[in-house]
Length: 186
Image 1 (spheres, rainbow, N blue to C red):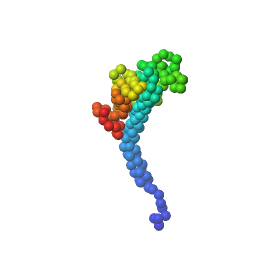
Image 2 (tube, one colour):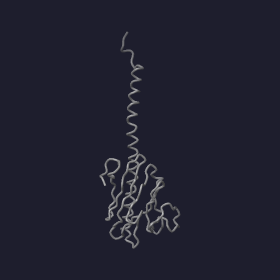
Image 3 (tube, rainbow, N blue to C red):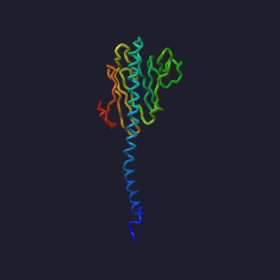
């Protein structure tokens, strides 16, 4: 008989291949879960930092007598809001309320809030500024009330968003906790 006429895999070869693939999958799955967790934390930190930079640029652009600031509400159902009236309550969704987070955009008062529903895998641990949980930006030079916003992922990784008195916003890795790679220490 000619052995070249029979081609394919034996049952043993197929079972060994499946076993190796299963071992590789169980080895890679925790790393993949960790990567997804880090990406959720990075996205939340970048969004908070972008909104802080937006608030600073709006304050300087408007050059009004009233500063623009950001009020944070940490906890399980966290949120923050950018407003001309500080402190504001980011949980209020009725723009007619006197404590809602509002910006006057083109003579149209609009709510400007962000809540944890957009970042469900990340917690806002704390927001500490010289004025409590609110920072504001000076309309003349963009100077700010310095402070830190702390974010934590479901798996315990942390990132801080720091605001200097000059209004510079940066994301950094706290020294006392695990954080995603690529961020300089605070």
